[in-house]
Length: 403
Image (cartoon, rainbow, N blue to C red; front, side):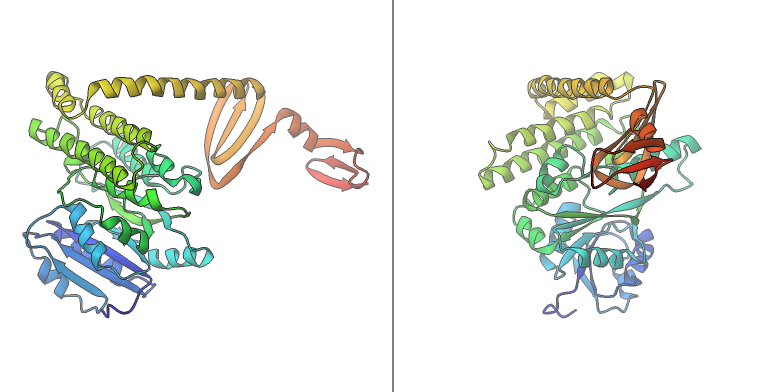
């Protein structure tokens, strides 16, 4: 590809030991309906036949780069960043796929408004040879799709770093198209370390520190093949060494985020964000401990990487914040009639009928809450308004008749 030409989007694909899926991945990219793309394949010293597979694709949009040693996903993406020319950058794992129209959807969204990041959803796929029940399979798929989804929370683009830290916006690097200028800016801060866990979190936090505009696409444009790798296992399938490495990587990821804040001169200003990430990583790793027989040993490993005094102090602060939120919820419940009410806000519809609560998902995102109570419902069934001289009407069965 001519490096003087800026394609609309660069797709960065790191490859390590995933050659059995690579053709499926590359087919989904080279056959995109939107053609103004750049495909950067980073062979992270994969031991298999990556070279041969890439050679099969006679496509001038492909940029093929090889590492001399295996550096891990974080640094493979960093190599891709340094060589990317697109206006936007998106990341695709080599065992996953993009929807054939993904880049067209991204471009269409960009045409509406140029933003720092465009977020889209994913379709999760779990291979049939994974030996779990149908119920567990559905639960695993729904969990992944919900977490990555671009339509589960109302995102305030004025506070994007806050939204990521508070886990309203997923910190996965996939399923987003990022402004190249910001990616280039944070690449100099990405440390030359090998991480197996928390590498997405670290790069995402750096990006959203600088990002100030956001838009979302509701369509599932990324096909995510659910991994059963180390980072997604619990202690029933992890050795002490494997769990220790996960803990080490998470602790390093937190430490590097703090170092990044120090370089910006904002470690005091954003210190609470650091401790929130620190606490969340600890909680995530603790939830993996399901092996009761070796629970004490795994807990000992976890607490060798995380300061339990910090965790306990943060927990007390969090209890206070949760208490305030619960008080607000109690007040709202008292103000909202229990006989009948509907509250529509963000992507959710909350219905109350005779004390029974029903929560539904809404396809549209409402930025302001809408409340339908018994009183407002009756007014729409039948009411007369003569207070406003310019707008006198009778309303019958939601139909407004002007007087």
